[in-house]
Length: 133
Image 1: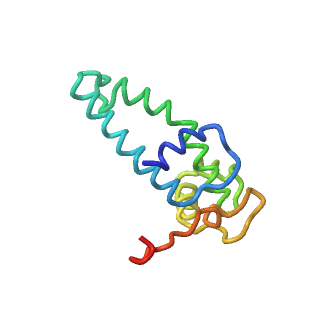
Image 2: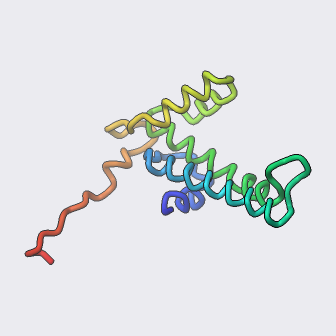
Image 3: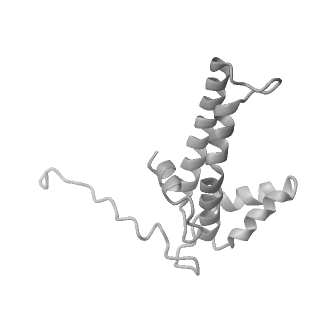
């Protein structure tokens, strides 16, 4: 959930890098909340005629546009690609598949022109032994 909130805090930050975990947790929670808004629209009678979504869904979806684009651009930066590669999504089928491949790839292990490796900036987890506790 922290990565989801982080994406909203950095909703206008199109620079830097985002790890796979940050991107995919944002996507996961975003999908969950979209289904919840569809359910709420249905139960509250706010669905548009002939649609499975309504007012709450549309408000939430519009609020998520900038954070979604920003986290996707930062994810592309993490694999060494320009944020403009996001425009590949406009190419039917092939563009979406290529972006999925880029989103799934591991981070570049070294610093790149978009910033330092986010994995290197995460402090290592040191196990606590019983004598240290």
